Length: 164
Picture 1 (cartoon, rainbow, N blue to C red):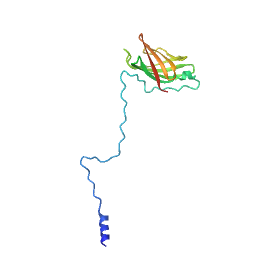
Picture 2: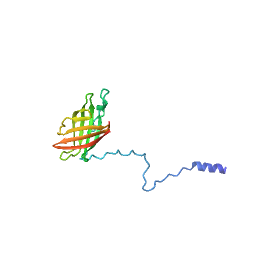
Picture 3: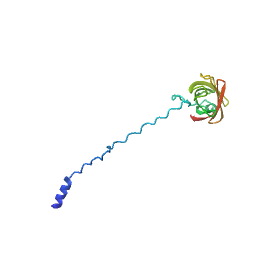
Picture 4: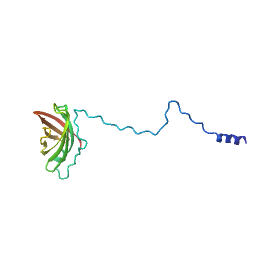
């Protein structure tokens, strides 16, 4: 009988309440990490509009023209950022583009849309609204040698494709 009484006493006992440790916080569900916000672009960086969309070249576009399609980035004279987005390419070699530049001498950073034509391995744009003339020659796939002429000055550099 003593064993039964001991069992009954143990069964009736409740577990002692745990007391919080001073200074501790209750455990809660983990919260998602805050979204990482990209650092703002430097004022002298070339920044394309986020809505820029490259339209893949259609089936009727020769491969030598389609090779220009995409977003290209590089530096002119080793210090001035530039980005060339070749947005559309037609079967006849006509293109539409968006060109972004960082601070370039006295010309503050900006973006200009334009159009041009591919002849052989060279893309020649019509004069951009800021007065610049741009030529891009493709010496090998994935590389453009770009010249940018503005206000009597000519800048040159090599750009690489950064996205299709």
